[in-house]
Length: 252
Image (cartoon, rainbow, N blue to C red; front, top):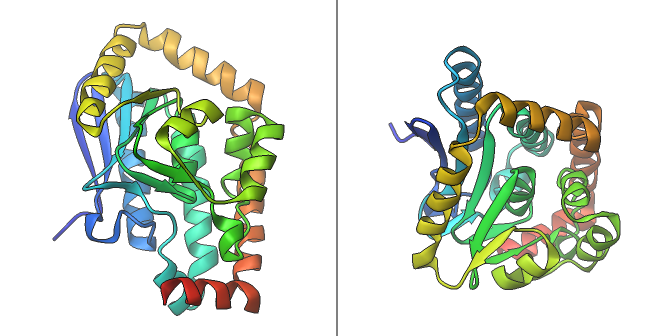
């Protein structure tokens, strides 16, 4: 049976891969449940063996993550709130993980997918990747990803990006502060990610964890109530006739 999210570990580095390449790694309920299972495995391992210091988050195939699975959102009763709640709670788990996280944005990172990149401690992409938050273009509210983008790039720049919608190149994402590094070509990405992961892994694991805990406290990253509120707001907007019509038009 195909596993929609996989975890490989070569201590001290682990890689969590979204593995729905046929759907551009769109966030379905099954994928998000698998992502929760893998992050729980990592949390347990880090707590009891402390041999994982760095975690790379990436996508199988040509995309990092294309955002919500729109077909499931539109056709499955109760799916929007369930999916968005799974996403919001996963972001908190990812942020509180006791290892440094790197988003290896190998291709399109759209909406919630781009949000995942901002949750990671660091993010790397290539110049031709497509990233952004087009939710308002689709009649959807980006309430789940908004707090993470604000923490990453500041309230003013986040406001402009989320209200404007649309997409940007990897190079533009670097200029906006959404990613921390941008290589010229996809072929260079793995080398850059491994170089950074190896550099981080030489740091003291206790020092890395303590620094993350402090940084999370300073920027309010672990506000679970805000995460849940974001899921409720987004689900409420998704339920409106306007959003339903715009999303169905998008699906063609």
